[in-house]
Amino acid sequence: MTEFDLIRRYFTRATPGALLGVGDDAALLRASAGSALAVSSDMLVSGTHFPPDAEPFLLGHKTLAVNLSDMAAMGALPRWATLAIALPAADDVWLERFSAGFFSLAQRYGVELVGGATTRGPLNLCVTIIGEVPQGRALLRSGAQPGDEIWVSGYLGDAALALAHLQGRIALSEADLDICAQALHRPQPRVELGLALRGIATSAIDISDGLLADLGHILEASRAGAQIDLVKLPVSLPVAGYFGQPAGMQCVLAGGDDYELCFTAHPARHAEVSDIAAKLKLPLANIGTVVAQQGCSVFDAAGNPLKLERTGYEHFR
Ligand code: ADP
Ligand code: MG
Image (cartoon, rainbow, N blue to C red; front, side, top):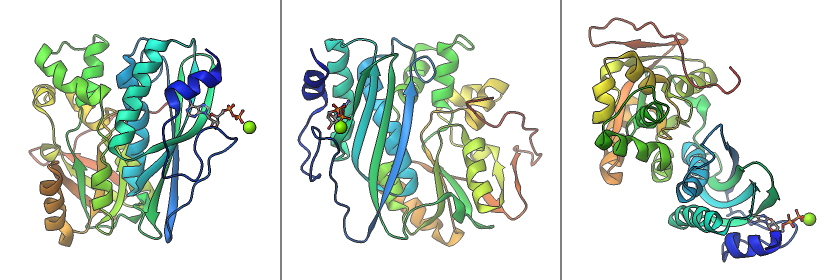
């Protein structure tokens, strides 16, 4: 199989939303009138972001999901993607399953694969995603204001707890592992939430490196601080079982890979945010408040501030 056979067989699908898709030196795209293009890349490296024997369908899903999550965090409608892939070998079974996982998620969001690059090398997956957002309506990190409520979607810490189990640091029951492994292997990008938050959220970010680290980016960009209530952090039952222990706390506050959204909104918008939660059937938890004084404090049930050590996953530390 030549490189071009491989691209044709596994990565070429109809792209009615593009002027020109896979097959030439570049794709041709037309943005909708009045929209800005939101462009973002994310790379998954074998051995760093996933084990070399990762199940290929789930890997295809996750490769696109982490990029869709960035679109969600901007309030952008994802439209097109490119895929740069380095493969140790042209393995038909692997490619069949990887592309099936990738395209099943792409189809769900109407995202078209319009190009990419394919080469031999250690397994490495890089997607560039392109979305649209009406000019002036993107959700930035820089808009949080003192007094705003801080919200997170879904549950925090599931993915990190599953990873702790797989690395042998804790031992989960099979049922608990089933729940947590979903978050780790099959993250659900919150695209619908991001779109619903246009005009409501004052800032947003997706949680890929842990709540404290990612909320920290909002606070830094907004030149503000935060007060978080530990008891308000939304956790699944498996994570709740570990919540009293340092490992559990670490997963919730600093665990990466959840791909939930963290956002801020004026308290006058509280009911609208709750309505969005009901409409999307997605839990949204108000975990604290933006304050003027910089720095992030987390308070326990008795109102005492926690001593925070590690604030998240940072690649070069
Ligand atoms: P060039 O050499 O001009 O960069 P290539 O020969 O690498 O182009 O690729 C041929 C076509 O296939 C291009 O349109 C490119 O965008 C597309 N392509 C390459 N790899 C992939 C991939 N993994 N998924 C989707 N499209 C791809
Ligand atoms: Mg070329």
